[in-house]
Amino acid sequence: MTARPPLSAALDGCTIVIAVDRRAGELAAALERHGAQVRKAPAVTIESHIDDLALIARTRELIADPPDIVVATTGVGFRGWMEAAFEADLSDELTAALAGAQLVARGPKARGAIQQAGFVADWVAESETSAELGEYLVTQGVAGKRIAVQHHGSGADGLDELFGGHGADVVSLTVYRWGPPPDPQVVERSVLQAGDGEIDAVLFTSAPGAAEWVAAAARADALDDIRSRAAAGRLLLAAVGPITAGPLTEAGLPALIAERGRLGSLVRSVVAYFGAGGAPHADTSAGRFELRSGGAVIDGRFVPLSRTGIEVLDMLFRARGGVVSRAQLQDALPRSSQSSHAVEMAVARLREALGVPDAIKTVVKRGYRLDVEDPE
Image (cartoon, rainbow, N blue to C red; front, side, top):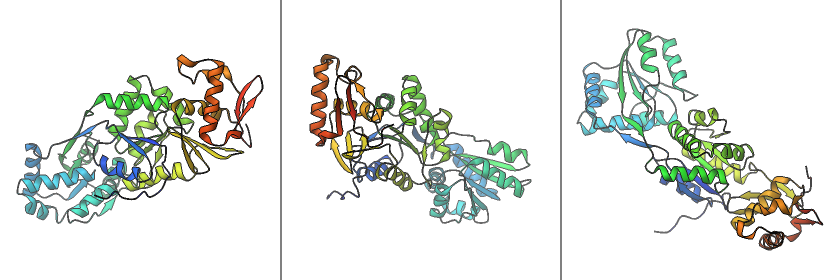
């Protein structure tokens, strides 16, 4: 099979973690076509319940007594419900039962699943929140209405109680649940690498996944380092929507939120961040410098560097034209080679690798600095 050609070099030198289980391969392939190195570290799994006897029983209840309103909270959940009905040979009967119902969706993914099943969504929550959806229906009036609510993997979100409290007859449907990560050690490794600067971005597509990844960072004592790198723009945390970004925001972590709740929009947001000037940079005499976990980008040209070279350049980069002493630079070197001579050799190798030796200036008896055109 012929490999698909790259779309751009925007993510050259970037190592990206996707804390995603479902559609991880699709997301990874899209990022790799822009030059990224992708590591998968799913923080949660989706445990399917399409064979759950309770779900089939609820479906039969709705066929016998059709709902007035159907609430779809997630695309994967609504599709799972339709698949369960098909497997139980109830597909035609369920379609007929839902034909006269008002269908409302919590967001574009749920709307897409409704359309895929052959229905039309009557209303979609712009904020993609259960709160907006609930407010909309309560304002319209739900007293005496029979409402089928398809829940997301985290279980109850307050909709059952809200509608029931306003006089509705609620039928609750749980199609899948969030389970533990398939490999907790992989998740732990990803948070440690993110805190150590070996990761450029972490992508999230569900709030439970984001919450578990943050919890893993706290357990590994890496949260402060992650927060510091994210605040400086050296670590991008990107979420598919505002709900997904919620656990990040609660932990004090800045998050880039895709404009639309789709994987394609998430990929475009990450590509724009690194490829269109969103990442931190420094304008030097040798051109525009940007750092990646795998090296440096100089005027759009990626230069791979050793781990030591990246650490040394990172210290110079963060100084923004200020002098970094030899003693400070020693901290970036392996313990076995921490000496003033080793620092000189590391800087010399870095200059050679960059191909622009004048970009790093020697300050006699003081140290080194990046030749920034407008130093802070």
